[in-house]
Each structure stands twice: as structure tokens, then as C-alpha cells.
Length: 252
Image (cartoon, rainbow, N blue to C red):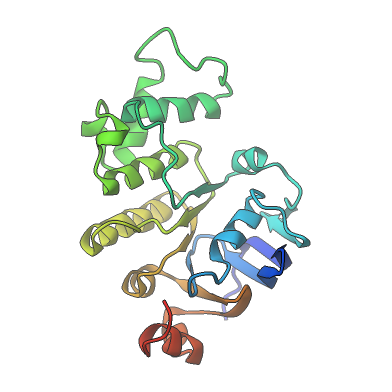
């Protein structure tokens, strides 16, 4: 069997919220260059696990490693600077600014010019901004206000903002939530193309099983905070828990 490089690893992650154990001894390895889905019923601990990885939520126990370096106690903004970036389930856009300005702000952060929030020149970093918008097919929407975009385009813009930081590993919390399945397929097709073109690893949470099985290289299954299985889509499809939860009328 071909040996794969591990870009992200968690060891025995535990997180409690009062009496609720959100993650229960989760040890997971993500391979460099793969598109990896995390699935599980509502409340399984998927978003908490992602937040622990990027240290928006600090685990009670366990460790996180990125590209061989422990990042468990690293501040979230420094983790992003290392190339591990997350897009959120709820859009974090500057809703009253244009698509151009949203990308421009991300690039200011990338270039370490956080105090130049309002550049004197409107075309500051223009070429870079337009290149980023090209990545997600939104150059023609550069001057549109973010709040007026369709929900699918808002998701694309949020991905573009994250791509401006040139991530090595992109984490997406339900990237197709709220959009029609056909548009969801287009978004995931774009994400897979970006992963291939930029040699980027992708980890995503998703409830639509057709999208999960169509676009994943491997899938991890969580239930009540515990990691039930990690395997190829075909083997996960045949997993007893997945069959009951997703194909036998169980809780989705």
C-alpha cells in the first residue's frame, strides 16, 4: 500500500461542554492533497472538532499537529498564517462592502498591512484582488455588494477570501448549506479543482450524502463525539452505522 504524507493529525482530542462530551478521544490523520469529508448526525461533534483543530475552541485534552508541528496552543490567527484556514458555516463577510473590498481586506492581512484598512488608492492590490476573484469565477461581480449576492455566490466569495491567504489546508463547514443541490455540486467541483491545481488539502463537513460520496477521497464518521470510522467512500457507504443513520431512515 502506498504510504501517504500526513499533513494534519489529532491525538486523543477531548472537549466537554458541561455534561456534554463534544469530542471523545478523537485521533485522526488527514493526508496531504486529499479531499476529506467529516460526517455524522446533528450534534455529533463535527464543528467542535474543526474548531479545536484551528484553536477557536481549545481542547480539554489531546494534541493537534499541522505539517509535523504541534499547534494545540497556537493562537488561531497564527494557525491561519501557517496555512491552515477555515471557512465558516455562517458567512463572515463584510456585507456592506463590495466583493473587491472584501478580497482587498484579506490581502491587506496577508501582506501584513492591517493598519492600512482604507488604502488611499482605490486600485490598491487590484491585480491580486482580481486574480483571487478569478479563482472562484467572480471577477464580473467585483463591484457588487456582498449582501446583495446570492447565497451561493456569498459562499464562493468566502472561499475566495480564504484562498487569498494561500492555504495549504482548507477547512469548510458545510460549504453547500442553503444552496440548491446543482449549485452545491458546482461549488464542490470548484473546490476539488482548486485542491488539485494548488496542491491543497481540503477537509469539509457536509450533510448531503450524494455530495459527500461524489467528491471525497476519504470520509470520517463521528457520533456522540467519537470517531466511528475513517475509510474510502465505498467502505464508508457499507459501514453499518452509516447505513442505519443515512440510508435506513435514521437521524441525519
